[in-house]
Amino acid sequence: MNIKYPVTYSVDYPDRALSRLTTFFRIIVAIPILILLCTVTATALTLHGSRTTTEIAGSGGLLFMAPLLMILFRQKYPRWWFDWNLELARFTNRVVVYLALMNDHYPSTDEEQTVHLNITYSNTQTELNRWLPLVKWFLAIPHYVVLLFLNVAVLIVTIFA
Image 1 (cartoon, one colour):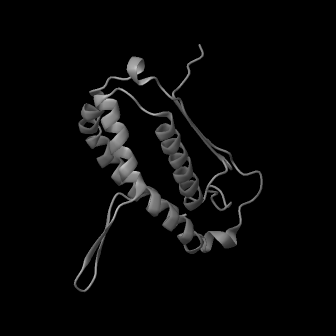
Image 2 (image 1 turned 60 degrees about the horizontal axis):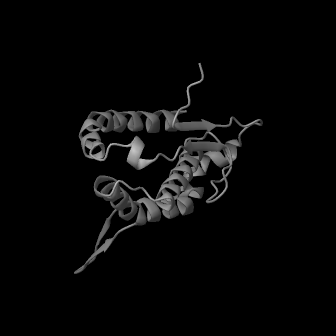
């Protein structure tokens, strides 16, 4: 039985020994790519100065709400928005793999490298329920609580290892 999954994710195991020297300095070396990732995924950042407050919104938050509203009201999900979200997810996963010490190649902003993520583009009019995204947010709350604890555990185990 051949089951086709809508999302496939894999990370190639390196065929060589990972560098122990770069492991120690990994968080320092990753600062530029983390700043780049935060600029495209942060929804809002508030900076409090001595007398002023500055609000900065990133494209991750801006490009999330519009497709949700388009699926909800027009039953359309433009291909270019899907491609943007797919490439952003791929880039985020490359950075996470680098920080989780699964590979010591610096994350590329455009190449696939050793992280493979594929998501099938679905027809919104025939394959998606237009009201289901609103319900799914409420159903996902327990999942996000569990993920919070798992992320803390991964951080602690990664630092300890």
